[in-house]
Image (cartoon, rainbow, N blue to C red):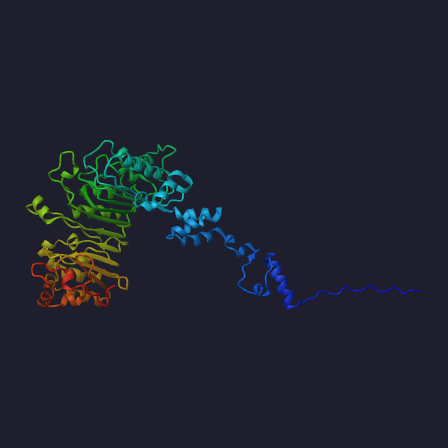
Length: 509
């Protein structure tokens, strides 16, 4: 009888293959190998290029957020971004987002091609977040008008712009009934505010920061920008308003602007208080009026022929409406003393800002000492008018007003009680007169008191380019005069000739 043979067992697979087998499997599953013949020593070379089959191991396999973070590092390398646009559609889209993020129509020739593409392609225009427009046309030729229209078309297309700077060249200061249409950009802003925006126009729904520089435009002309709901920062340079704004259409406490800067402008204090009162919660305020644009012999229709009034008291009363929100205040006045003597032969009464004690968030103050103290009455204590926990205080010292000179030492010393103790506390001083004259103020002793209280002191000369040390201030006047002797007697000494380009003291920032 035949005995059946038992079924043979299958041999178990090798549980631990050799190291060479593992290496072979790894290579066969991880890399794409071409069929080109190569010598053995070439194949063994570890530098041989291979292509990964795992998409995550390549640049294209990275998430969109990581790729965008990488591309953003090329923001200042426009040539690299342009080359990256030519690789594939995905990198083209990502690179264009960074390449067209900031444009400058009219600023330089290098941006001309970029401006033309944004003007023609609305999709590219959606990438623009920052735009600098220059309308510096000295003539009204057909070429100038065409260039203006091209830049206005760019402004219409950039519907996602966040920050915009508009510079308008010199124009006649005489009033024009068609000013908005002549400028073009002002007509676009007016349309965006009115709500009657046609399809090719821009609503500026995402505009956060707006800067306008134009020496012949008034606040009344650009009052529409205060109605933009998304606008938080408004900077006005070289604008004018010689009277209060008639027909001011912004109710008190309704404007969303939080940062307001009015610099180098010829503006009456009545107009300034109108604007401040319309703000809902002002956080940062900069104000520096100038009288150099005054044209006393101008025509009747020239608004620059009228003088503008200034008052620290009215300004302080207006700012007190924002006592719970104001964090930064930077105020100054730039006037020609000869003009003031001509306009006010019997003197000018501007008052003082008053007390800012009830401003809990105010941390940075830049202002003349005379704006807080009535130096004619001998006031010399700034701590009575400034809030506690100040971080920075900046002021300029001048020897023009003898009454102010007498109060400077005690006024600076009083800051020790209101400055926040710690490394952040700093007082910035600008000395506007020659050094020997300032030495007579007995400032070194008072400044050392502040330094001993843990407050940094930073002293600059009137040009803002040379730092002055305490050793310079304590130098005897006779020695300083010897050092200040110029090489040629007929030339007057200045800071560069005298050698007062010293580094700050050890406590200065």
